[in-house]
Each structure stands twice: as C-alpha cells, then as structure tokens.
Length: 416
Image (tube, rainbow, N blue to C red; front, side):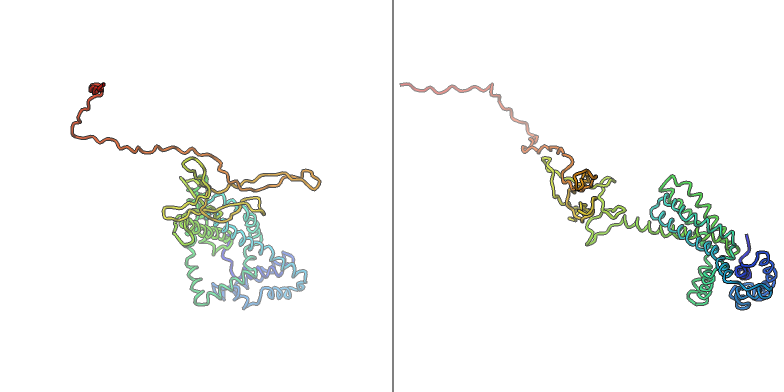
C-alpha cells in the first residue's frame, strides 16, 4: 500500500507523461533530479498543498517538462511524441471509466435483485465483472497517480473545491464528509440485511449471507483507509453503489408490498383485486388464481352473459382477453364483469402456395365460447307442507276401531 497521493506525485505523473518520448532510463534520471525541488515547494505550500497551488507556483507540468527538456539539451517533443504522450492517458482513462461503469452495473443489479427479492438476479454481476477486472489490472499497471492526473479528475476536484467555498453547497459537502465513517457501517448493515432478506425468501441463498457480510466488513476496513491509498477506491466504490441500489430497491419492494395489500374504494376502481406482474387483474379463491367463472341453473344448464356483483353492488371487474386479426395470441380487449370468458385457442392450419403445394402452417386464433364441462346440480328436497303434530298434555280419547262397530240393520222397505 502507498501513502496518500500528494501534489508532488500527481505533478510528477504529468511530467512523466510529457517526457514519454524519451528513453525510460533518462526520464527516471530527470525525475530523480527534480523530485527534491518539488518536495521543497510542497513543503513551503503547507501540508495541505494541492496540485493547483503547485501549478500556480511552477507552471503546468507540461511547461515544466519543456523547461527540463531545454535545460537537459533534449530536443523538443515532436508531433508524434505529443501524440504518444496523449496516448499515455488512454490506459488511466480506461481504468477510471471501467470503475465507473462496473460500479453503476453493481448498483443496477442490486436494485433489480432487491425489488424482486430474487437471488438469481445477482448472477447478472458477471456482466460488469470483466470490465472491473480490466480496470483494476490497468490501475495496478499504471499506478493511481496517472488516474488522478486525468483532466476529468482535475475538473472534478476543481468543481468540488469551488462548491466547498459556497455557503449552501459547502455545508452539504462538509456534512457528507463528516458522515463518511458512518456510511461504511451503513453499507455493511445494508449488505447483511440484503442477505437475510434473500435467505428468508430462498433457502438456497444461505451461502450469500456470509459472503455479503465479509464484503461489508472489508468495506468498513477499506473505507477508513481510502484517504491514504486511493487504490482502495476500486473496492469501496462498487460496494457503495451496490448498497445504494439495494436500499432503493428495498424501498421500492416495501412500497409495492404495502400498496398490494392496501385497497381503497375509488370511483374508477370498484373491485378489490390483485394484479400479476403484467398488470392483469386477478381473482383468487382459496389462494389459487381463478381465470374464469361458469354458472349453471337448477337443471344443470349453463348460463351465459352472467354479470357478477359483490355484496355492496360493486361489479367484479376483471381483464377480458380476445383474439385480434393482427395477432395470433390473446390480447387485452377491456375490462368488465360479464362471465364466462371465452376460451382463447390457437391452432396450426396448413396453407398452400399459388400452385397448390403445401407451404407450411399458419397459426390461427379463435374464441371458443363453449362450456368445457357439465355440472351435476344436486337436488335439494323441498320442505313438507303439512306441519307435524304437536304433542298435547291432555290424554287422547281412544277412537273405536271400525272392526268393533256394529252396523245397524237397514230399515225394511214396505211391500205392497
């Protein structure tokens, strides 16, 4: 690990780039000669000397390199040499922007994984991984000083310095700088919470928890030392972006969960129904999705064009699908509460060319309104119309049997 990149090291990195057309051994000899002088200048400027102060004192590193050429009797840099010197910025620039792109990729992957609570989404980290590895390799090869000497880094530093001098932005910047130690702890906590959420959703993600915890601990360790070694930025920047993406995705997942579980009656939404990932309304029964409803009368005959309402007179409105001439698959054609829905069927039909020869198959879509099953409606016996006798407390009078009753003789008919 190296110390904090001082103004002298940044200045010398740009001088080295301007002398890149000279032999490497002679460049090192020149830099060894001027390094003590630059160190004295930095000492005079104070411990917090910046590259801008050195440029104001000595001139730009490019003009300083030109003076060194003249004093050493070296020829001025040719156009080819200038082009070569400019090309010396290519690798540091790739290292810088490779870090930026890979960090943004980590943030996007974390956001998607947190919103969907899917551990498999983390496999997409394999996409920015080659960019990050190439960026890290170029950093270790060319040194962090060459990256800090890039024009874009200089512009960023000057912009932050100008903002720090203003009242409002300066207070914000100083507040954020004071929160740096806590930020790395927050990153570690977010990584651990992210791993716990994935583990609770997918048991197979249990191995991610110790890995994310280890990355969080490494981020806390590196975050406290990044001011002394800027190479650690290649560790803490991707971790920070991953934590930010995970937090934003977690907030989005929480809001979506609360919204899906809270329903309010409005003028435009008359029925409490859930929706799938495509925004299609769903009706559930017993925890299972119901795609259609069929009604039958008491004789078992299917009923069509049945309109359904709940106990408060609100229509049970669901998405209706139908066939379109321009598409072979089903399409949303509106919403209503009319059942049953027609079944959308797709069939393959052969077709021929202009000479009557078979040319292949064409997919056709049609709506089948037939009921796919029959229902056996149970017969409920009607209640008896004659009420059952109510027992009385008085003893009943016996009724004589007809067998014991004698029939009186008929009266004789008089004869003449």
